[in-house]
Image 1 (tube, one colour):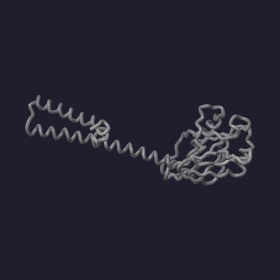
Image 2 (tube, rainbow, N blue to C red):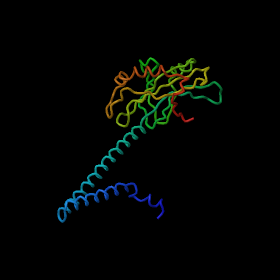
Image 3 (cartoon, rainbow, N blue to C red):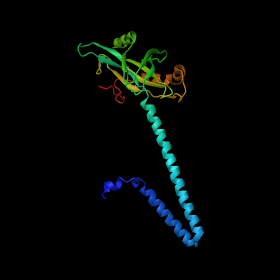
Image 4 (cartoon, rainbow, N blue to C red):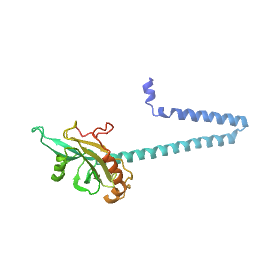
Length: 237
């Protein structure tokens, strides 16, 4: 049997546990022999040893199962989270013709999307957005970004069903300078949250922003075009 066949056996990952059990039992036998224990007492000690070994295995299995469930839950939450940001959509057939959209690159739908200016005070509702979808910004916001030639920072907060995933997901967005290296494109960054929304409980937007608005305000004001540490989100281009 070759090495690959041996490594594919179900018992291969547990080989050190088997070695440990055998070595442990060898120590028990030596102790019993040294103590002069034979017959029924030897049988009782052997039974107790293997019961203890099985209990350790059961504990390990329960712990591994719990950890896997935690990872599965985290993965489920991430897969169903909407990640929404603004982006510029250029029209290749006409130079200089473009408009701004909101785009959801997350795996879950957003029941509500809110736009906050750099002051992070009053939200503007943009509507719902399906997973993987995009839609034009309302005309007033689109015009605001088109006119923001010197750069415009803003915050997007997406709301998801709280029974499926994290209810609120914020992103930082920077409409770059028209005359700069990025030519009016939008740069994005994940916002750091000070107070996470509760799991499986509804939280209204006012309470969420009351706990996090100051932190968002500081992050968005520190968001710069020339910040080389910025983490750009993949917008599918």
